Length: 81
Image 1: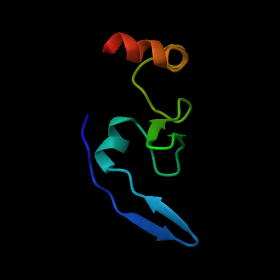
Image 2 (image 1 turned 180 degrees about the vertical axis):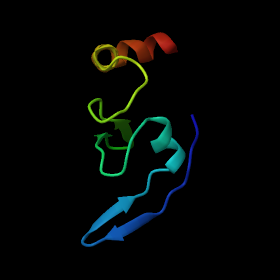
Image 3 (image 1 turned 90 degrees about the vertical axis):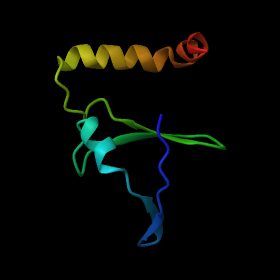
């Protein structure tokens, strides 16, 4: 895991945080693409949206794996400890 400090920028009446270009490129995302944002009291986690990622594997397989990971997220976290 790497930690990067990013500035919060004003966009109209809202605020925006720019994503590092290398993170975006490694995940096959494009400008205008979609991401998923998980917000808790202490943390914001950003995930590529399954439908917007260009991957080098079969899209149906990638969707299956991503669904499995999402459904079993807590179990996999406990197993990783």
